[in-house]
Length: 114
Image (tube, rainbow, N blue to C red; front, side):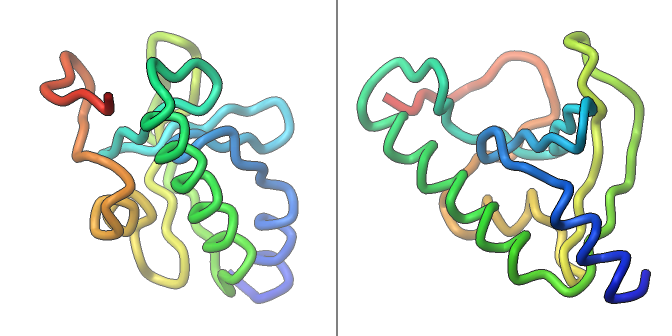
């Protein structure tokens, strides 16, 4: 991907929350991570951590020279499931490493943000 294409992809991506992006009408759910909710948090701690995750993703996208979206089907809500790779690093793994998300591949969550 050329720098111009990467910049175009970055400009057209918006961040809904730490694990969900939007590109036009397409909603993209990151594979492999769950981050706290921003829109309907269960407590203040979840909202604050969710906002941190959203800011982190927004900053990483803005700084990225290369953005790859590796689509892999849809979830039950119609969102595109994808691995998003920024400058060679998987965004889901980066969120987990930064302490802003938990490893998640669907099903029941074994943790609580509150």
